Length: 210
Image (cartoon, rainbow, N blue to C red; front, side):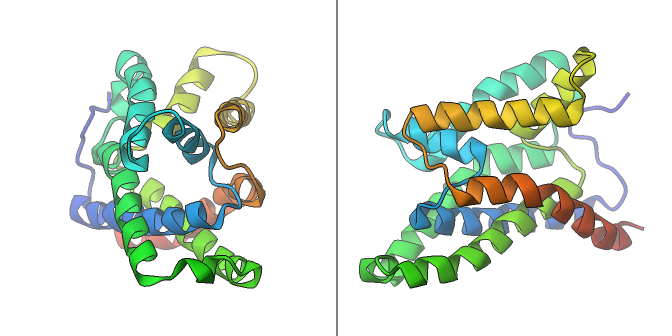
Protein backbone atom coordinates (compact mmCIF):
# COMPACT_ATOMS: atom_id res chain seq x y z
CA UNK A 1 0.00 0.00 0.00
CA UNK A 2 1.26 3.45 -0.89
CA UNK A 3 2.50 5.44 2.10
CA UNK A 4 2.26 9.17 2.66
CA UNK A 5 5.36 11.15 1.68
CA UNK A 6 6.51 8.22 -0.45
CA UNK A 7 9.53 8.97 -2.65
CA UNK A 8 8.89 7.56 -6.13
CA UNK A 9 11.59 7.18 -8.83
CA UNK A 10 13.16 10.43 -10.05
CA UNK A 11 12.11 12.08 -6.80
CA UNK A 12 14.45 15.09 -7.24
CA UNK A 13 13.00 15.84 -10.67
CA UNK A 14 9.48 15.50 -9.31
CA UNK A 15 10.27 17.96 -6.52
CA UNK A 16 11.56 20.50 -9.03
CA UNK A 17 8.40 20.01 -11.11
CA UNK A 18 6.17 20.40 -8.05
CA UNK A 19 7.92 23.53 -6.74
CA UNK A 20 8.02 25.12 -10.20
CA UNK A 21 4.34 24.35 -10.71
CA UNK A 22 3.28 25.84 -7.38
CA UNK A 23 5.28 29.03 -8.02
CA UNK A 24 3.88 29.40 -11.54
CA UNK A 25 0.33 28.75 -10.33
CA UNK A 26 0.74 31.32 -7.54
CA UNK A 27 1.97 33.92 -10.03
CA UNK A 28 -1.08 33.35 -12.22
CA UNK A 29 -3.37 33.45 -9.19
CA UNK A 30 -1.93 36.78 -8.00
CA UNK A 31 -2.73 38.33 -11.37
CA UNK A 32 -6.18 36.73 -11.62
CA UNK A 33 -7.18 38.10 -8.21
CA UNK A 34 -6.30 41.61 -9.39
CA UNK A 35 -8.22 41.22 -12.66
CA UNK A 36 -11.48 40.46 -10.81
CA UNK A 37 -12.70 38.18 -13.60
CA UNK A 38 -13.04 35.13 -11.38
CA UNK A 39 -10.72 32.50 -9.93
CA UNK A 40 -10.77 28.74 -9.47
CA UNK A 41 -13.49 27.46 -7.08
CA UNK A 42 -11.10 26.89 -4.16
CA UNK A 43 -9.62 30.39 -4.41
CA UNK A 44 -13.13 31.79 -4.82
CA UNK A 45 -14.09 30.39 -1.43
CA UNK A 46 -10.86 31.70 0.07
CA UNK A 47 -11.64 35.18 -1.25
CA UNK A 48 -15.04 34.96 0.41
CA UNK A 49 -13.44 34.02 3.71
CA UNK A 50 -11.07 37.02 3.51
CA UNK A 51 -14.16 39.25 3.56
CA UNK A 52 -14.91 38.05 7.10
CA UNK A 53 -11.49 37.41 8.60
CA UNK A 54 -8.79 40.10 8.99
CA UNK A 55 -6.18 37.74 7.56
CA UNK A 56 -4.16 37.49 4.37
CA UNK A 57 -5.31 35.43 1.39
CA UNK A 58 -2.58 32.86 2.11
CA UNK A 59 -3.64 32.37 5.72
CA UNK A 60 -7.32 32.08 4.81
CA UNK A 61 -6.50 29.55 2.11
CA UNK A 62 -4.51 27.49 4.60
CA UNK A 63 -7.46 27.54 7.00
CA UNK A 64 -9.81 26.34 4.25
CA UNK A 65 -7.38 23.58 3.29
CA UNK A 66 -7.12 22.37 6.88
CA UNK A 67 -10.78 21.35 6.84
CA UNK A 68 -10.36 19.24 3.70
CA UNK A 69 -6.98 17.99 4.96
CA UNK A 70 -8.78 16.49 7.97
CA UNK A 71 -10.89 14.40 5.57
CA UNK A 72 -7.76 13.16 3.79
CA UNK A 73 -6.12 12.28 7.12
CA UNK A 74 -9.19 10.32 8.14
CA UNK A 75 -9.88 8.36 4.96
CA UNK A 76 -6.75 8.12 2.75
CA UNK A 77 -3.38 9.23 4.06
CA UNK A 78 -1.67 7.71 1.02
CA UNK A 79 -2.67 10.81 -0.94
CA UNK A 80 -0.56 13.03 1.32
CA UNK A 81 2.84 13.95 -0.07
CA UNK A 82 5.28 16.77 -0.60
CA UNK A 83 2.94 18.23 -3.23
CA UNK A 84 0.20 18.36 -0.59
CA UNK A 85 2.32 20.59 1.63
CA UNK A 86 3.59 22.61 -1.32
CA UNK A 87 0.08 23.46 -2.48
CA UNK A 88 -1.77 23.59 0.84
CA UNK A 89 0.75 25.67 2.77
CA UNK A 90 2.81 27.54 0.20
CA UNK A 91 0.55 28.43 -2.73
CA UNK A 92 -1.49 31.12 -0.96
CA UNK A 93 1.50 32.77 0.68
CA UNK A 94 3.47 32.81 -2.57
CA UNK A 95 0.42 34.40 -4.23
CA UNK A 96 0.44 37.02 -1.45
CA UNK A 97 4.12 37.70 -2.18
CA UNK A 98 3.52 38.07 -5.91
CA UNK A 99 0.55 40.29 -5.07
CA UNK A 100 2.86 42.58 -3.12
CA UNK A 101 5.32 42.70 -6.04
CA UNK A 102 2.42 43.32 -8.44
CA UNK A 103 1.07 46.27 -6.45
CA UNK A 104 4.54 47.71 -5.91
CA UNK A 105 5.69 47.49 -9.52
CA UNK A 106 2.46 48.26 -11.40
CA UNK A 107 0.44 51.43 -10.68
CA UNK A 108 -3.27 51.07 -9.96
CA UNK A 109 -4.15 53.14 -13.04
CA UNK A 110 -2.89 50.29 -15.22
CA UNK A 111 -5.59 47.95 -13.88
CA UNK A 112 -8.33 50.51 -14.42
CA UNK A 113 -8.05 50.03 -18.18
CA UNK A 114 -10.32 47.21 -19.39
CA UNK A 115 -7.99 46.65 -22.35
CA UNK A 116 -5.06 46.03 -20.00
CA UNK A 117 -7.18 43.72 -17.87
CA UNK A 118 -8.12 41.51 -20.81
CA UNK A 119 -4.58 41.59 -22.18
CA UNK A 120 -3.30 40.31 -18.83
CA UNK A 121 -5.99 37.63 -18.66
CA UNK A 122 -4.38 35.27 -21.17
CA UNK A 123 -0.90 35.09 -19.56
CA UNK A 124 -2.48 34.88 -16.10
CA UNK A 125 -4.61 31.90 -17.17
CA UNK A 126 -1.63 30.25 -18.84
CA UNK A 127 0.50 30.64 -15.71
CA UNK A 128 -2.25 29.33 -13.44
CA UNK A 129 -3.38 26.35 -15.53
CA UNK A 130 0.12 25.30 -16.63
CA UNK A 131 1.39 25.63 -13.06
CA UNK A 132 -1.50 23.57 -11.67
CA UNK A 133 -0.94 20.88 -14.32
CA UNK A 134 2.80 20.73 -13.63
CA UNK A 135 2.39 20.37 -9.86
CA UNK A 136 -0.26 17.66 -10.27
CA UNK A 137 1.77 15.72 -12.85
CA UNK A 138 4.76 15.61 -10.50
CA UNK A 139 2.91 12.78 -8.73
CA UNK A 140 4.15 13.42 -5.19
CA UNK A 141 0.90 14.37 -3.53
CA UNK A 142 -2.00 16.66 -4.32
CA UNK A 143 -3.76 19.38 -2.41
CA UNK A 144 -6.53 18.27 -0.04
CA UNK A 145 -9.00 20.08 -2.29
CA UNK A 146 -8.01 17.87 -5.24
CA UNK A 147 -7.73 14.68 -3.16
CA UNK A 148 -11.17 14.72 -1.51
CA UNK A 149 -13.18 14.13 -4.74
CA UNK A 150 -11.11 10.99 -5.37
CA UNK A 151 -11.83 9.79 -1.84
CA UNK A 152 -15.55 10.48 -2.19
CA UNK A 153 -15.77 8.70 -5.55
CA UNK A 154 -14.16 5.61 -3.99
CA UNK A 155 -16.85 5.46 -1.30
CA UNK A 156 -19.95 6.08 -3.44
CA UNK A 157 -21.34 4.17 -6.41
CA UNK A 158 -22.93 7.17 -8.12
CA UNK A 159 -22.05 9.60 -9.51
CA UNK A 160 -18.66 8.72 -11.04
CA UNK A 161 -15.50 10.72 -10.37
CA UNK A 162 -16.28 13.36 -13.00
CA UNK A 163 -19.69 13.91 -11.44
CA UNK A 164 -18.25 14.06 -7.93
CA UNK A 165 -15.59 16.55 -9.02
CA UNK A 166 -18.18 18.73 -10.75
CA UNK A 167 -20.42 18.78 -7.68
CA UNK A 168 -17.39 19.49 -5.49
CA UNK A 169 -16.27 22.44 -7.64
CA UNK A 170 -19.77 23.87 -7.94
CA UNK A 171 -20.26 23.58 -4.18
CA UNK A 172 -17.09 25.53 -3.45
CA UNK A 173 -17.92 28.08 -6.13
CA UNK A 174 -21.41 28.70 -4.74
CA UNK A 175 -20.11 28.91 -1.17
CA UNK A 176 -17.50 31.41 -2.32
CA UNK A 177 -20.10 33.40 -4.23
CA UNK A 178 -22.36 33.60 -1.18
CA UNK A 179 -19.42 34.87 0.88
CA UNK A 180 -18.55 37.49 -1.71
CA UNK A 181 -15.84 35.61 -3.61
CA UNK A 182 -15.00 36.34 -7.24
CA UNK A 183 -16.86 34.19 -9.81
CA UNK A 184 -16.48 34.97 -13.51
CA UNK A 185 -15.15 33.90 -16.87
CA UNK A 186 -11.96 32.54 -15.31
CA UNK A 187 -13.93 30.14 -13.11
CA UNK A 188 -15.50 28.65 -16.22
CA UNK A 189 -12.20 28.61 -18.14
CA UNK A 190 -10.41 26.72 -15.36
CA UNK A 191 -13.24 24.18 -15.21
CA UNK A 192 -13.09 23.50 -18.96
CA UNK A 193 -9.36 23.74 -19.73
CA UNK A 194 -7.53 22.39 -16.67
CA UNK A 195 -8.25 18.74 -17.50
CA UNK A 196 -7.01 18.86 -21.12
CA UNK A 197 -3.93 20.86 -20.14
CA UNK A 198 -3.07 18.31 -17.44
CA UNK A 199 -3.22 15.54 -20.07
CA UNK A 200 -1.06 17.55 -22.48
CA UNK A 201 1.53 18.44 -19.86
CA UNK A 202 1.64 14.94 -18.43
CA UNK A 203 2.58 13.41 -21.79
CA UNK A 204 5.55 15.74 -22.10
CA UNK A 205 6.72 15.72 -18.49
CA UNK A 206 6.65 11.92 -18.42
CA UNK A 207 9.73 12.01 -20.65
CA UNK A 208 11.62 13.52 -17.70
CA UNK A 209 10.50 10.66 -15.48
CA UNK A 210 11.51 7.78 -17.74
